[in-house]
Image (cartoon, helix red, strand yellow):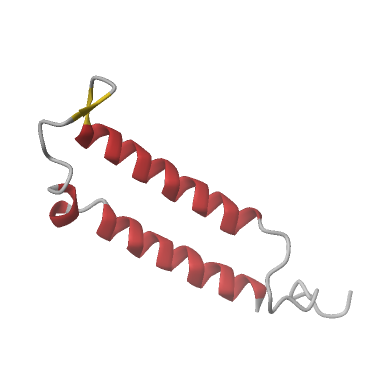
Length: 77
């Protein structure tokens, strides 16, 4: 059960990443505005990418999930 929930979360994160880093939402950042002298578009791309990586690492490295019963799926051990 633990792996199934983790897999569902990772698939949802992948879909969210595809939506966030796709054309319609990227046009929101395509302006001549700069932040600390850097264009806003690349900053938004790298920030979104870093956040997605951080969330993926958090999901994969989490120790216990709410429905975790301590069973690793291996029977007889």
